[in-house]
Image (cartoon, rainbow, N blue to C red):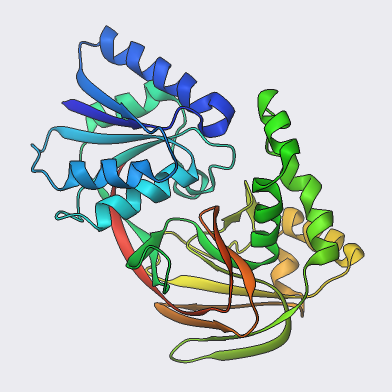
Length: 311
């Protein structure tokens, strides 16, 4: 077996660097052949993964990603846009949220992952989302976690542009900024009209607060937003939550964490399908696997796609 590592060392406030160091020591001790490339700027992993997948590799060659959900998204898009879009890869989660790893029950322990790869190199087919958005990388794009419009994207926007986040990152507490910005987003996020439809269902709302198309249950670093969603169901789910007050938010969070009964709330709605249309009229913030998309109206066709994961 030969491993080719693609590494984001700054993922998880430095957890990427730590996981990389631990894995390298294991590979050296086990006399396993490997090489590596480190990303030096946002988006570079797309090119590195695409370059790797454009080449032919032996069945014993393994592409292994070390990083967070954003790193995973970049690699996924690089491979799917390559000459060999079925190229399998392994993933060692080292981010702050790690929602995809939670949904697929992936280990963050380098020793356990290496032992698993030595035992079995048969990839598993995993669902992902697919969409096209004019002006966004001008091609088909993919997501492993979610495409969100509204509240979650607004929180993401405030957090990414916060000087406080840089300070918190220095003490490995960068994720606290998201909690701090929830109240800020609650005050500033306006409701908006949205149409969500599938081949068999249609929903129209004039006071939507959050619209998320998701590939699995988890959201925001471990919150089971839609417990029934499965990453191998060959379906995606569009969730719409209507405007709520702070007391209502607390109530929703309580039921979400207690037993998942928040899905029965009259302000919580969802559609499950192989293809979903999401259309908004106003300019809204959006995020795809945590990457910010500038404010705009949206007219999206979201579909189910797949990739091959070594676990």
